[in-house]
Image 1 (cartoon, rainbow, N blue to C red):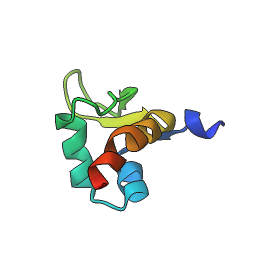
Image 2 (cartoon, rainbow, N blue to C red; image 1 turned 30 degrees about the horizontal axis):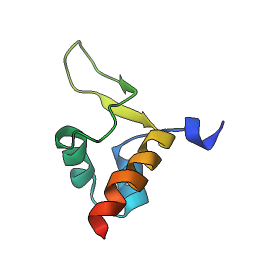
Image 3 (tube, rainbow, N blue to C red; image 1 turned 135 degrees about the vertical axis):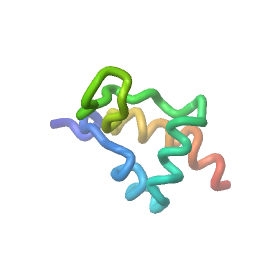
Image 4 (tube, rainbow, N blue to C red; image 1 turned 45 degrees about the vertical axis):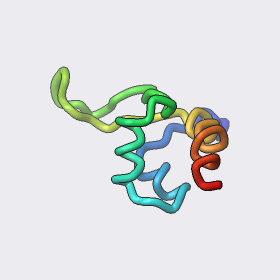
Length: 72
């Protein structure tokens, strides 16, 4: 599988950035530039929470475009 086609979750993103999962979760909900999840898996019923997953390439692009700018 192409690395860009890999799916990542909040824990993977947090590990990559060396920050907490809570910080990533906050960005996913509040940052309008954060990419929307590709899919929500393991949601027990319609409208309930599940595990959000993103394409790694979308997250990598967000990191380069938005996250790194904040760190400068």
